[in-house]
Length: 145
Ligand SMILES: [Zn+2]
Image 1 (cartoon, rainbow, N blue to C red):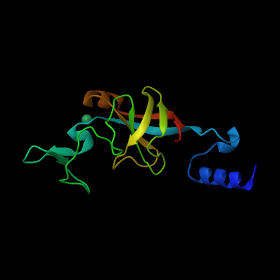
Image 2: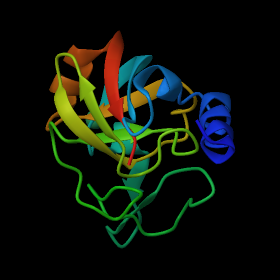
Image 3: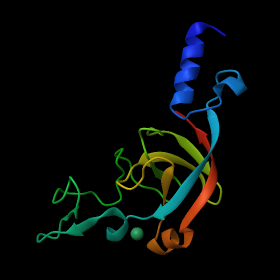
Image 4: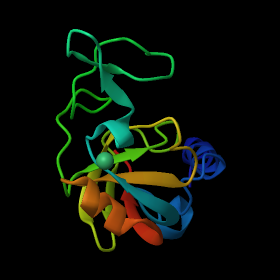
């Protein structure tokens, strides 16, 4: 193993993306235990409300009062049930693929104020489905982009 590869490996380990040594290099698939909750595009899940002009705006936070596109992710894509995952993008950047037991393959395309560290949020079609998912600790297959 060359020195550059060694350094890359050490950096990867330092940023919690472990396992490159055991697989001998190119594979970036990891199994990571994460705490998964569910969300949908509703006001309760995404913190928006209607202003006096009936426009949808952020209800709180840094963007309070700014227009919000309902159902649009932080990466600009349309949130899709069974696909869109919100994660801490300092650890799992947009485009990270995740196979979540009980949810299937999804892609990190969103983030949220409470979604930090080992927490992820799975997008569902309805609020009822998001509630039914609840909060589950799952072993997730993660493929870094
Ligand atoms: Zn909801």
